Image 1: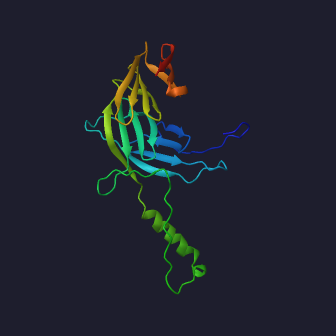
Image 2: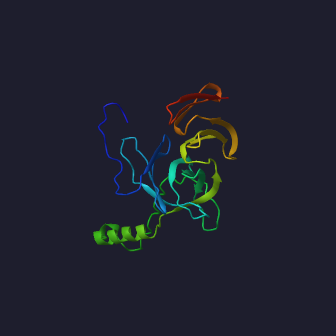
Image 3: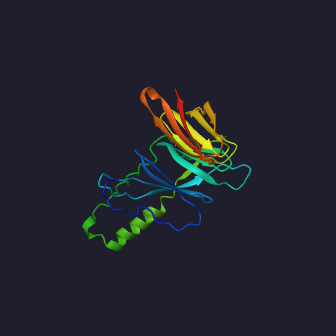
Length: 231
């Protein structure tokens, strides 16, 4: 967005469930519709300011207890993984899985180019009817099912609902209604730091300073504001 730009609609949907919106400077915009199963949509913004055609993914969250899952925070972790955190303090790391059972490592936020259609010998593309092109388009859409993001890792990170989730270059910062602010090492998920607020954490913003010094501004439901520093 630039100063003076007129507001524009980038998303339109009818749903009874609240949508989770997150943005990434390099990837684009993510919209998660946390129903069962969840649907994740991705939009990339062009230099002109317009948004390219969106990509959709089905979300499969591992849930052995089969309890009701409520997603409260969701952010992309990398070009090949996506994070979801829930009201029960659980964190899911999601990724695409091949038919052979191997996790894919490519950029799944990049729309794949369509394979050029092989022309039948002796035919002139200019003589193809519009109806034929329409049928080919519909067939192509039917032959490309919506990709699934499956649970690669599932971990309990808080005892209460997760209210903040921030992905930093080598760190993951989380906070919860259980009053805790936690700092994790990526990708090992080793706990590096812990701070307990007086009330449930309602908001958190990180900032990386000089020499990779991490500073956090944290607020809780009791109206307290904390400025934390981690070196």
